[in-house]
Length: 442
Image (cartoon, rainbow, N blue to C red; front, side, top):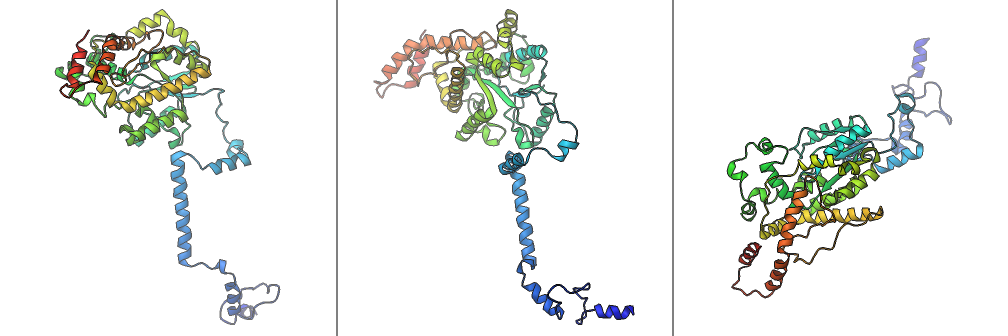
Protein backbone atom coordinates (compact mmCIF):
# COMPACT_ATOMS: atom_id res chain seq x y z
CA UNK A 1 0.00 0.00 0.00
CA UNK A 2 2.80 2.43 0.97
CA UNK A 3 4.73 1.49 -2.16
CA UNK A 4 1.68 2.26 -4.27
CA UNK A 5 1.29 5.69 -2.68
CA UNK A 6 4.97 6.43 -3.24
CA UNK A 7 4.63 5.41 -6.85
CA UNK A 8 1.64 7.67 -7.23
CA UNK A 9 3.63 10.60 -5.83
CA UNK A 10 6.51 9.90 -8.18
CA UNK A 11 6.58 12.03 -11.27
CA UNK A 12 6.30 10.17 -14.57
CA UNK A 13 9.68 11.49 -15.54
CA UNK A 14 11.32 9.76 -12.63
CA UNK A 15 11.61 12.72 -10.23
CA UNK A 16 9.57 13.79 -7.22
CA UNK A 17 6.29 15.54 -7.79
CA UNK A 18 6.86 19.32 -7.32
CA UNK A 19 3.41 19.54 -5.68
CA UNK A 20 3.17 16.44 -3.47
CA UNK A 21 0.48 18.03 -1.28
CA UNK A 22 -1.82 19.05 -4.04
CA UNK A 23 -1.75 21.03 -7.21
CA UNK A 24 -1.77 24.83 -7.07
CA UNK A 25 -4.69 26.93 -8.22
CA UNK A 26 -5.20 26.57 -11.90
CA UNK A 27 -4.28 22.93 -11.87
CA UNK A 28 -1.05 21.00 -11.74
CA UNK A 29 1.23 20.89 -14.76
CA UNK A 30 1.05 17.74 -16.73
CA UNK A 31 4.75 17.02 -16.48
CA UNK A 32 8.06 18.38 -15.16
CA UNK A 33 9.00 19.92 -18.48
CA UNK A 34 5.93 22.12 -18.29
CA UNK A 35 6.98 23.25 -14.77
CA UNK A 36 10.47 24.14 -16.02
CA UNK A 37 8.95 26.21 -18.82
CA UNK A 38 6.83 28.12 -16.32
CA UNK A 39 9.87 28.86 -14.14
CA UNK A 40 11.77 30.09 -17.20
CA UNK A 41 9.18 32.83 -17.52
CA UNK A 42 10.71 34.39 -14.34
CA UNK A 43 14.14 35.51 -15.58
CA UNK A 44 15.02 37.28 -12.34
CA UNK A 45 15.17 33.90 -10.61
CA UNK A 46 17.81 32.59 -12.96
CA UNK A 47 21.48 33.09 -11.91
CA UNK A 48 24.58 32.08 -13.76
CA UNK A 49 28.00 31.67 -12.15
CA UNK A 50 29.14 34.89 -13.84
CA UNK A 51 26.18 36.84 -12.41
CA UNK A 52 26.89 35.47 -8.94
CA UNK A 53 30.56 36.45 -9.16
CA UNK A 54 29.66 39.95 -10.34
CA UNK A 55 27.30 40.44 -7.39
CA UNK A 56 29.91 39.29 -4.87
CA UNK A 57 32.59 41.52 -6.42
CA UNK A 58 30.26 44.54 -6.24
CA UNK A 59 29.52 43.80 -2.60
CA UNK A 60 33.25 43.49 -1.83
CA UNK A 61 34.05 46.82 -3.51
CA UNK A 62 31.25 48.50 -1.58
CA UNK A 63 32.49 47.10 1.75
CA UNK A 64 36.10 48.12 1.10
CA UNK A 65 35.06 51.59 -0.01
CA UNK A 66 32.95 52.04 3.09
CA UNK A 67 35.83 50.85 5.30
CA UNK A 68 38.38 53.24 3.77
CA UNK A 69 35.89 56.10 3.89
CA UNK A 70 35.27 55.56 7.59
CA UNK A 71 39.01 55.34 8.31
CA UNK A 72 39.51 58.62 6.47
CA UNK A 73 36.82 60.66 8.13
CA UNK A 74 34.10 58.73 9.89
CA UNK A 75 30.83 57.17 8.77
CA UNK A 76 29.00 58.37 5.65
CA UNK A 77 26.89 61.45 6.15
CA UNK A 78 23.65 59.81 5.01
CA UNK A 79 23.99 57.14 7.71
CA UNK A 80 24.33 59.83 10.36
CA UNK A 81 21.28 61.64 8.98
CA UNK A 82 19.32 58.40 8.90
CA UNK A 83 20.20 57.57 12.50
CA UNK A 84 19.20 61.07 13.58
CA UNK A 85 15.89 60.69 11.74
CA UNK A 86 15.16 57.29 13.27
CA UNK A 87 16.41 58.26 16.71
CA UNK A 88 19.69 57.66 18.53
CA UNK A 89 18.34 55.02 20.90
CA UNK A 90 19.62 51.48 20.32
CA UNK A 91 19.29 48.18 22.17
CA UNK A 92 22.61 48.76 23.94
CA UNK A 93 21.47 52.21 25.00
CA UNK A 94 18.47 50.67 26.76
CA UNK A 95 20.03 47.44 28.08
CA UNK A 96 23.79 48.11 28.23
CA UNK A 97 25.90 49.84 30.89
CA UNK A 98 25.03 53.45 31.72
CA UNK A 99 26.70 55.98 29.40
CA UNK A 100 29.60 58.08 30.64
CA UNK A 101 28.72 61.43 32.11
CA UNK A 102 28.65 64.20 29.53
CA UNK A 103 30.30 67.33 30.87
CA UNK A 104 28.77 70.72 29.97
CA UNK A 105 32.14 72.00 28.66
CA UNK A 106 34.96 70.66 26.45
CA UNK A 107 36.38 67.80 28.50
CA UNK A 108 39.18 66.80 26.09
CA UNK A 109 41.78 69.47 25.30
CA UNK A 110 45.11 68.95 23.52
CA UNK A 111 47.92 71.50 23.57
CA UNK A 112 50.44 70.17 21.01
CA UNK A 113 52.86 72.90 21.93
CA UNK A 114 55.33 74.30 19.40
CA UNK A 115 58.90 74.42 20.68
CA UNK A 116 60.32 77.76 21.87
CA UNK A 117 56.94 79.50 21.67
CA UNK A 118 56.36 80.13 25.36
CA UNK A 119 55.35 76.54 26.01
CA UNK A 120 57.36 76.15 29.23
CA UNK A 121 55.72 79.25 30.69
CA UNK A 122 52.26 77.95 29.76
CA UNK A 123 53.01 74.51 31.23
CA UNK A 124 54.00 76.15 34.52
CA UNK A 125 50.65 77.94 34.51
CA UNK A 126 48.80 74.71 33.70
CA UNK A 127 50.32 72.91 36.67
CA UNK A 128 49.04 75.62 38.98
CA UNK A 129 45.64 75.69 37.29
CA UNK A 130 45.19 71.90 37.36
CA UNK A 131 45.55 71.90 41.14
CA UNK A 132 43.26 74.89 41.46
CA UNK A 133 40.44 73.68 39.18
CA UNK A 134 40.83 69.91 39.51
CA UNK A 135 41.27 68.90 35.86
CA UNK A 136 43.61 66.13 34.79
CA UNK A 137 46.85 67.52 33.35
CA UNK A 138 48.40 64.77 31.20
CA UNK A 139 52.02 65.38 30.21
CA UNK A 140 54.65 63.32 28.43
CA UNK A 141 58.31 62.61 29.12
CA UNK A 142 58.96 62.48 25.36
CA UNK A 143 60.14 65.88 24.14
CA UNK A 144 61.96 65.21 20.89
CA UNK A 145 59.64 62.94 18.90
CA UNK A 146 57.04 64.93 17.00
CA UNK A 147 56.65 62.63 13.98
CA UNK A 148 54.95 59.32 14.68
CA UNK A 149 54.37 56.12 12.77
CA UNK A 150 50.82 54.89 12.27
CA UNK A 151 51.11 52.43 15.17
CA UNK A 152 52.58 55.12 17.41
CA UNK A 153 49.71 57.44 16.52
CA UNK A 154 47.15 54.76 17.38
CA UNK A 155 48.86 53.99 20.69
CA UNK A 156 49.13 57.65 21.71
CA UNK A 157 45.53 58.41 20.75
CA UNK A 158 44.38 55.39 22.74
CA UNK A 159 46.32 56.52 25.82
CA UNK A 160 45.00 60.07 25.55
CA UNK A 161 41.39 59.04 24.94
CA UNK A 162 41.32 56.76 27.99
CA UNK A 163 42.58 59.46 30.37
CA UNK A 164 40.24 60.60 33.12
CA UNK A 165 38.11 63.52 31.97
CA UNK A 166 38.26 66.46 32.00
CA UNK A 167 41.84 66.32 30.83
CA UNK A 168 44.34 68.59 29.09
CA UNK A 169 47.10 66.73 27.27
CA UNK A 170 50.29 68.57 26.34
CA UNK A 171 53.32 67.44 24.37
CA UNK A 172 55.58 68.54 21.51
CA UNK A 173 53.86 66.56 18.74
CA UNK A 174 52.52 67.29 15.29
CA UNK A 175 48.75 67.42 14.84
CA UNK A 176 46.93 64.09 15.36
CA UNK A 177 43.65 63.25 13.65
CA UNK A 178 41.75 61.33 16.34
CA UNK A 179 38.70 60.69 14.14
CA UNK A 180 40.87 58.84 11.63
CA UNK A 181 41.40 56.10 14.23
CA UNK A 182 37.84 56.08 15.52
CA UNK A 183 38.38 58.42 18.47
CA UNK A 184 36.56 61.57 19.51
CA UNK A 185 38.32 64.64 18.15
CA UNK A 186 39.46 66.82 21.08
CA UNK A 187 39.68 70.61 21.26
CA UNK A 188 43.10 71.84 20.12
CA UNK A 189 44.90 74.97 21.32
CA UNK A 190 48.38 76.30 20.51
CA UNK A 191 50.66 79.34 20.47
CA UNK A 192 53.18 80.39 17.80
CA UNK A 193 55.61 83.29 17.42
CA UNK A 194 57.65 85.16 14.84
CA UNK A 195 59.52 82.39 12.94
CA UNK A 196 62.95 84.08 12.96
CA UNK A 197 62.69 84.82 16.67
CA UNK A 198 61.71 81.22 17.35
CA UNK A 199 64.62 79.85 15.33
CA UNK A 200 67.21 82.09 17.00
CA UNK A 201 65.90 81.26 20.46
CA UNK A 202 66.09 77.54 19.71
CA UNK A 203 69.57 77.85 18.16
CA UNK A 204 71.12 79.24 21.33
CA UNK A 205 68.98 77.20 23.70
CA UNK A 206 70.29 73.95 22.21
CA UNK A 207 73.83 75.15 22.81
CA UNK A 208 73.70 77.01 26.11
CA UNK A 209 70.36 76.23 27.79
CA UNK A 210 68.66 78.72 30.11
CA UNK A 211 68.99 80.16 33.60
CA UNK A 212 67.60 77.03 35.26
CA UNK A 213 71.11 75.58 35.39
CA UNK A 214 74.51 76.12 33.85
CA UNK A 215 74.69 72.49 32.67
CA UNK A 216 71.16 72.45 31.28
CA UNK A 217 72.40 72.50 27.70
CA UNK A 218 74.82 69.61 28.35
CA UNK A 219 71.89 67.41 29.31
CA UNK A 220 69.90 68.23 26.17
CA UNK A 221 72.75 68.03 23.64
CA UNK A 222 75.52 65.94 25.24
CA UNK A 223 76.87 64.69 21.90
CA UNK A 224 77.30 68.15 20.34
CA UNK A 225 80.91 68.86 19.44
CA UNK A 226 82.54 72.01 20.79
CA UNK A 227 83.09 73.53 17.35
CA UNK A 228 79.41 73.02 16.61
CA UNK A 229 78.31 74.39 20.00
CA UNK A 230 80.26 77.62 19.48
CA UNK A 231 79.49 77.94 15.76
CA UNK A 232 78.83 81.59 14.90
CA UNK A 233 75.19 82.15 13.96
CA UNK A 234 76.15 84.26 10.91
CA UNK A 235 78.45 81.55 9.56
CA UNK A 236 75.72 78.95 10.06
CA UNK A 237 73.24 81.01 8.06
CA UNK A 238 75.48 82.46 5.35
CA UNK A 239 77.31 79.17 4.73
CA UNK A 240 73.99 77.32 4.57
CA UNK A 241 74.67 74.77 7.31
CA UNK A 242 71.90 72.12 7.62
CA UNK A 243 70.74 73.53 10.96
CA UNK A 244 70.18 76.94 9.39
CA UNK A 245 68.52 75.85 6.14
CA UNK A 246 65.50 73.88 4.97
CA UNK A 247 63.97 71.53 5.86
CA UNK A 248 65.16 72.27 9.42
CA UNK A 249 63.73 75.80 9.21
CA UNK A 250 60.33 74.40 8.22
CA UNK A 251 59.28 73.89 11.82
CA UNK A 252 55.99 75.55 12.80
CA UNK A 253 53.73 74.44 9.95
CA UNK A 254 54.07 70.64 10.56
CA UNK A 255 52.59 71.12 14.06
CA UNK A 256 49.35 72.12 12.35
CA UNK A 257 49.58 70.18 9.09
CA UNK A 258 49.80 66.76 10.73
CA UNK A 259 51.60 63.44 10.39
CA UNK A 260 51.44 63.09 6.61
CA UNK A 261 54.95 62.84 5.06
CA UNK A 262 54.22 65.83 2.81
CA UNK A 263 53.66 67.95 5.93
CA UNK A 264 57.44 67.97 6.41
CA UNK A 265 58.13 69.29 2.90
CA UNK A 266 58.20 73.11 2.58
CA UNK A 267 55.51 74.03 0.09
CA UNK A 268 51.96 75.13 -0.63
CA UNK A 269 50.41 71.74 0.12
CA UNK A 270 51.57 71.67 3.73
CA UNK A 271 50.76 75.36 4.18
CA UNK A 272 47.17 75.01 2.97
CA UNK A 273 46.56 71.87 4.99
CA UNK A 274 47.86 73.62 8.12
CA UNK A 275 45.48 76.54 7.51
CA UNK A 276 42.59 74.12 7.05
CA UNK A 277 43.33 72.36 10.35
CA UNK A 278 43.56 75.69 12.15
CA UNK A 279 40.07 76.56 10.94
CA UNK A 280 38.49 73.17 11.60
CA UNK A 281 40.25 71.68 14.63
CA UNK A 282 41.81 74.46 16.71
CA UNK A 283 39.75 76.45 19.15
CA UNK A 284 42.50 79.06 19.44
CA UNK A 285 45.97 79.63 18.01
CA UNK A 286 47.54 82.57 19.81
CA UNK A 287 50.53 84.81 19.18
CA UNK A 288 53.29 84.81 21.79
CA UNK A 289 53.97 88.49 21.22
CA UNK A 290 50.49 89.11 22.65
CA UNK A 291 50.55 86.44 25.34
CA UNK A 292 48.34 88.31 27.82
CA UNK A 293 45.55 88.55 25.24
CA UNK A 294 46.01 84.85 24.46
CA UNK A 295 45.55 83.97 28.14
CA UNK A 296 42.53 86.25 28.37
CA UNK A 297 40.83 84.54 25.42
CA UNK A 298 41.67 81.09 26.81
CA UNK A 299 40.05 82.10 30.08
CA UNK A 300 36.89 83.09 28.18
CA UNK A 301 36.80 80.03 25.93
CA UNK A 302 37.82 77.39 28.50
CA UNK A 303 37.02 78.81 31.95
CA UNK A 304 37.03 75.36 33.60
CA UNK A 305 40.72 75.15 32.70
CA UNK A 306 42.02 78.72 32.54
CA UNK A 307 39.91 80.74 34.97
CA UNK A 308 42.22 83.18 36.78
CA UNK A 309 45.21 82.44 34.54
CA UNK A 310 45.96 86.09 33.80
CA UNK A 311 46.21 87.04 37.47
CA UNK A 312 48.53 84.08 38.08
CA UNK A 313 50.68 85.06 35.12
CA UNK A 314 51.04 88.64 36.41
CA UNK A 315 51.90 87.48 39.93
CA UNK A 316 55.50 88.48 40.85
CA UNK A 317 56.28 84.98 42.15
CA UNK A 318 55.36 83.45 38.82
CA UNK A 319 57.43 86.05 37.01
CA UNK A 320 60.48 84.86 38.89
CA UNK A 321 59.89 81.29 37.73
CA UNK A 322 59.29 82.46 34.17
CA UNK A 323 62.55 84.39 34.07
CA UNK A 324 64.44 81.16 34.83
CA UNK A 325 63.48 79.82 31.38
CA UNK A 326 65.10 82.66 29.41
CA UNK A 327 67.73 81.39 26.96
CA UNK A 328 71.27 82.54 27.73
CA UNK A 329 74.30 83.63 25.66
CA UNK A 330 72.33 84.90 22.70
CA UNK A 331 73.97 87.09 20.09
CA UNK A 332 72.38 89.07 17.28
CA UNK A 333 72.88 87.95 13.67
CA UNK A 334 73.73 90.43 10.96
CA UNK A 335 70.95 92.08 8.93
CA UNK A 336 72.03 90.09 5.88
CA UNK A 337 71.72 86.83 7.81
CA UNK A 338 68.29 87.79 9.10
CA UNK A 339 67.16 88.66 5.57
CA UNK A 340 68.33 85.27 4.28
CA UNK A 341 66.41 83.54 7.06
CA UNK A 342 63.32 85.51 6.14
CA UNK A 343 63.56 84.35 2.52
CA UNK A 344 64.11 80.70 3.50
CA UNK A 345 61.13 80.80 5.87
CA UNK A 346 58.62 82.44 3.52
CA UNK A 347 56.04 79.67 4.02
CA UNK A 348 56.47 79.92 7.78
CA UNK A 349 55.85 83.66 7.60
CA UNK A 350 52.81 83.28 5.39
CA UNK A 351 51.32 80.91 7.95
CA UNK A 352 52.35 83.17 10.84
CA UNK A 353 50.67 86.21 9.30
CA UNK A 354 47.54 84.18 8.52
CA UNK A 355 47.27 83.04 12.14
CA UNK A 356 47.97 86.56 13.36
CA UNK A 357 45.12 87.95 11.25
CA UNK A 358 42.73 85.29 12.56
CA UNK A 359 43.82 86.04 16.13
CA UNK A 360 43.25 89.79 15.73
CA UNK A 361 39.83 89.14 14.19
CA UNK A 362 38.95 87.04 17.22
CA UNK A 363 40.11 89.79 19.54
CA UNK A 364 37.88 92.32 17.80
CA UNK A 365 34.88 90.01 18.13
CA UNK A 366 35.43 89.91 21.88
CA UNK A 367 35.96 93.65 22.13
CA UNK A 368 39.68 93.52 22.90
CA UNK A 369 41.55 96.60 21.76
CA UNK A 370 44.43 95.93 19.37
CA UNK A 371 47.78 96.40 21.03
CA UNK A 372 49.68 96.74 17.77
CA UNK A 373 51.30 100.11 17.13
CA UNK A 374 52.11 101.30 13.63
CA UNK A 375 55.74 100.38 12.94
CA UNK A 376 58.07 102.92 11.43
CA UNK A 377 58.84 102.76 7.75
CA UNK A 378 61.23 99.91 6.93
CA UNK A 379 62.26 98.49 3.57
CA UNK A 380 60.37 95.22 3.32
CA UNK A 381 63.22 93.42 1.56
CA UNK A 382 65.68 94.30 4.31
CA UNK A 383 64.26 92.68 7.42
CA UNK A 384 60.90 91.22 8.56
CA UNK A 385 58.66 93.61 10.44
CA UNK A 386 57.96 92.29 13.94
CA UNK A 387 54.72 92.51 15.85
CA UNK A 388 55.21 95.29 18.38
CA UNK A 389 53.20 95.45 21.60
CA UNK A 390 52.69 98.25 24.08
CA UNK A 391 54.18 96.22 26.92
CA UNK A 392 57.23 93.91 26.71
CA UNK A 393 56.69 90.21 27.19
CA UNK A 394 58.16 89.25 30.56
CA UNK A 395 58.44 85.49 30.27
CA UNK A 396 60.88 82.98 28.85
CA UNK A 397 61.00 84.85 25.53
CA UNK A 398 61.47 88.37 26.86
CA UNK A 399 65.09 88.76 25.84
CA UNK A 400 64.42 87.34 22.36
CA UNK A 401 62.19 90.30 21.55
CA UNK A 402 64.51 92.81 23.18
CA UNK A 403 67.78 92.02 21.47
CA UNK A 404 66.19 91.54 18.03
CA UNK A 405 64.23 94.76 18.40
CA UNK A 406 67.52 96.52 19.19
CA UNK A 407 68.69 95.50 15.73
CA UNK A 408 65.60 97.04 14.17
CA UNK A 409 66.04 100.32 16.01
CA UNK A 410 69.78 100.50 15.44
CA UNK A 411 69.51 99.96 11.70
CA UNK A 412 66.24 101.74 11.08
CA UNK A 413 67.68 104.99 9.69
CA UNK A 414 70.58 103.45 7.81
CA UNK A 415 68.29 100.81 6.32
CA UNK A 416 66.04 103.47 4.86
CA UNK A 417 69.02 105.29 3.40
CA UNK A 418 70.30 102.00 2.01
CA UNK A 419 66.96 101.34 0.36
CA UNK A 420 67.00 104.75 -1.34
CA UNK A 421 70.60 104.40 -2.46
CA UNK A 422 69.99 100.89 -3.80
CA UNK A 423 67.71 102.36 -6.43
CA UNK A 424 70.75 104.16 -7.91
CA UNK A 425 73.45 101.47 -7.58
CA UNK A 426 75.69 101.05 -10.63
CA UNK A 427 76.98 97.72 -11.90
CA UNK A 428 80.34 97.98 -10.17
CA UNK A 429 78.82 97.89 -6.68
CA UNK A 430 78.39 94.60 -4.83
CA UNK A 431 75.11 94.45 -2.91
CA UNK A 432 76.56 92.03 -0.33
CA UNK A 433 79.45 94.38 0.30
CA UNK A 434 77.00 97.23 0.89
CA UNK A 435 75.01 95.14 3.36
CA UNK A 436 78.22 94.14 5.17
CA UNK A 437 79.16 97.79 5.49
CA UNK A 438 75.66 98.51 6.72
CA UNK A 439 75.88 95.86 9.43
CA UNK A 440 79.06 97.43 10.78
CA UNK A 441 77.37 100.79 11.39
CA UNK A 442 76.42 101.43 15.05
